[in-house]
Image (cartoon, rainbow, N blue to C red):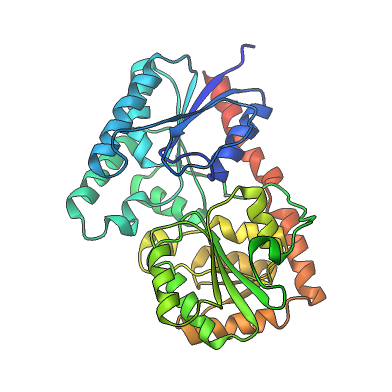
Length: 375
């Protein structure tokens, strides 16, 4: 049988998107020809060697309505004339081009919704733009056949709204064994203090990082490491300066995943502190939770349904009931004073054995094999 060719598209720069990397690598290993396409930004990291081609395009516009229009027009013409058997669209902002190309070329389309796109806080207070995306989603969603998303809470929301079957494929990492030849000093961090990490590619406003910084006033013998990027970082740096916490909070820019995991495995506690301020955050299941599990470190997390479900099931750490700096500090202090208990290590090992991509990828392969049989 001829190998099927898949074009996977995203609006990000591909460098740090581990979900894309896992999906593309898995489909390549399963015998599909995969082509990944995204965009190239001024500060984009190298994407490294991959066993499939990855295409990144510079755009004239890089934000706002003009960017989304330019992106989808250019992507549409690319998809229209490239050899392809299956289109794979990541998130709503890639869907218009993929949907139109799939209609014209009569090719199957897989839609991967990483979040409740129309509920993201960036659209709050922008009713016209939000309504535009809602209309686009409504027009296309009902006509989709293959839809996947990242957790059961988001799946239920979409099923309730559109009465469509949604397949859940979680953002679980590859198995990781943190054999580490690095120390805190390699990252410019103190060796004589506990390390608390808040990592992520989306350290944005209203995701709890501000409270985490303020919590450091109530934590002794530990520093907070904020590793990654996002629109809240500059404001967080100002807050650190104004609160005289420069020796207690360290900022580390985005880095390749392998190096990030080496840093994470050195830490004593991992934070996932999104606020319940909108539906998208309420039903989030951040990648960082699974990275912490793979790195073998206990967690302190927000009281959100998907986070609570996993942390309580496996006994991975503590859940924040009082979302004040003092309340967060109380939970962190409990964790870092008991990190090395044998019971906690056993829980983390069990979770890592179950919550990994080797188990989850079977769902993705099964979906694509069923599509291939129908092609």
